[in-house]
Amino acid sequence: MSVQSAVLPLARTPLYDLHCELGARLVPFAGYEMPVQYPPGVIAEHLHTRAGAGLFDVSHMGQALFEGAHALRAFERLAPGDIATLHSGQMRYTQLLDANGQILDDLMVTRLADEGGRQRLFLVVNAASKEADFAHISAALPGFALTPLPQLALLALQGPQAAEVLENIVPVVSRLAFMRSAEFEFDGFRLRISRSGYTGEDGFEISLPAAKAEAFARTLLFDPRVLPVGLGARDSLRLEAGLCLCGHDIDATTDPVEAGLLWSISKRRRVEGGFPGFARVAEAIARGPARRRVGFILDGKAPAREGAEIETPDGRAIGRLTSGGYAPSLGRPIAMGYVAAQEAIVGAAVNLIVRGKPAPARIAATPFTPHAYVRRA
Figure (cartoon, rainbow, N blue to C red):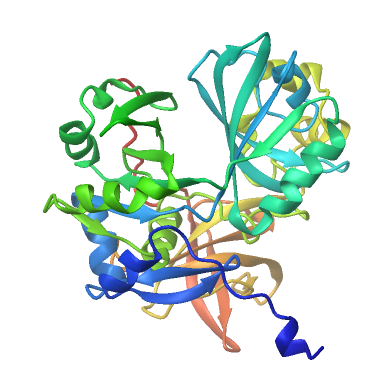
């Protein structure tokens, strides 16, 4: 068999035909054909999401059900998040860690209502690592049932008008609080809606049967306040919001402390531990990490990309970029990366090496644009 014939074909989400109809430019991403942008373009899609409501197809991500007696405490053996104290319908952002306390993936964990004496968790993991994540969870916690849910699609509606738009279709959904999830009924079927988001804006994630996804998406797009948005604007939106992209800003070479994710580890977990790599994470908390993730605002117009070296003005290397691009909301390029902890001073001048030439920049606090999450509905 040739190498070419051994390459697996790209998968398609339930909205593939709709993407084609809308004129999307499709690209390979995490094994799927995904829309990177639509005819209006990345900048227009980005700015529309900041002002109105953007609709994202995130059906490529991995959804699964984890269940069993004492499933909440069990899951804490894999992740540093405070899972055991979750109430039904409450969500947590956390990470799967390896034995060194470094990040295999980040994920969202929601507690569902108990059923038949079993505690249940709804998991959403990243597309590129979903098979590895599910295998890791199953191998580490063999006494529990992990059921992937490929029959479900996942949509995200993000932006300041998202709640009003969705309320017209699913009444009372706007009462949902931030980082909460609940089931709703629409057109005779059930869907699970959570309130969070990867853009820094108020927004919702809608998990629903794949067979119903296109019709539901069309209903949302019928509202003139909603624009379809591709991966290009999804990336620029999350970068402005200072949010990590797994496989880039966080991976198996980074721990939650240096990544600026200590907020996702509760005081109880910092004391009790019980998750992989706890000793290393606890040491980083106590002594401070050797490096830190920081933001950068560039002086010029040319963006600096992942992998660019970070230098002090006198030419001393202090780190590398993990994300970078143009920020439409700011009208200038921005970036994120890791620098030695003693160099992580907001306002400090640095050079980002772009095609062998220094691009002047300064270290900036993140997020670059304020988060607009609705803390109370």
